[in-house]
Length: 534
Image (cartoon, rainbow, N blue to C red; front, side, top):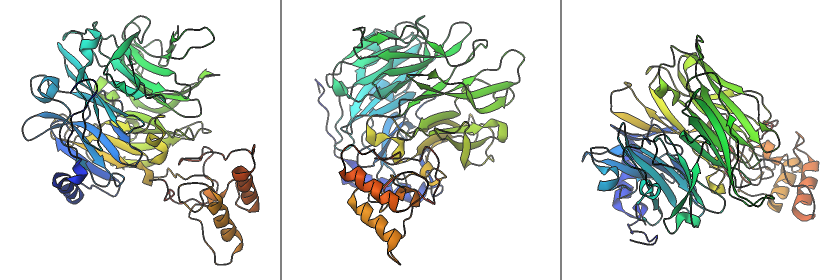
């Protein structure tokens, strides 16, 4: 179909296929209460350079995009969905790629990423990337509620990139205006460009090339994040001596100077003396911060590789570095082993989540967090034991973006990674992990009755809890601390009534009005995540 029209396919939730798929996964794929095997095969991944492979829609349904080597020996680009918080999954029919875009060998599809807009439409980017001389990049929209699919658009054709122009471009984000932003394949090798859709939702399948991420052109492994002012943050590896990981901003708005465009300078996130600060990640929150984690290579004669973190805001720029973890050069054996970490953030509170293969401590795959007020990361959960070997877990991702709000990490902490029982020897498994059940407690401030909103019913609930003998007992007392002073008493009810009915009264502190973690840490009893925070 043309002009943004989509092919139609029936929704799998209304078909026998979808029901059977859910039953099979329910019976066979659950590893534990928090972990599920999405599929196991020769690929079982979103690729080595994916950015986001999972999104959440407004109904709480999770959608994961990945590549599957199926029984027909096709490399199928599939969407798997879950309506029960990741406990069971079904595969949406049909796959998104076709003969020309990597369904068959040679040069099959090898990378993919996904974003979601405020209508629940998935925007999928993928590549047929085969080193050294076959590189093509594609884009398509998919509506998981109806099965509608847009035409497949070859991004490489839009930019004029030939097959032998090498690239690792594979990131896609959507801003608050539903403009689609892409890290795109360029005619020159290892030169990635920023592309912007010409219409919201990319409705006319057209994109404008806004130029190279790096002032010197060279850019690889580019990551994108949109801040709360709509600016596009880009981090990338500049493959020119000394080989550094950098950050640059594209501002699409018209400012006092009257011009939109690229920030003139870049900021070196990694060191300036090593040879390959190759890999990193970006995430943004609603408090005006952008978060980055990256790996700094071992300097000449140094035994360490360092995985580090910084936070950016408009006033202060980039913070000093915080060490996420260190590893020896023996533990990190090559560039592929960089791809063992990722970060996301609670967009409401600014709490940063990190998942990584802790090579310095027997190789555990762990989930860590850093509160907005904390100087360091603290491990809150071990995702896997070390029994399968040091390099069995790779390509972790964390779901979540600032836009649209229903895809925020505040609603649930969803992690995927690839499991390699014997590294380098298929089959592999794509694993989903629900991190919300760990030490990351989520609630909505003021929502004492846990119905998902703060209103006068919560005031009545709180008064009953405080003054009626044998009355209600809040699951999360922290949510009843409406004035956030570290206690639960009548002052919270007065503060709440003012917030609800007195114009000009101060708003509630985070986490509010959506689910999140307390940026100052829980000071009152809150043993589990609120029932209103799936």
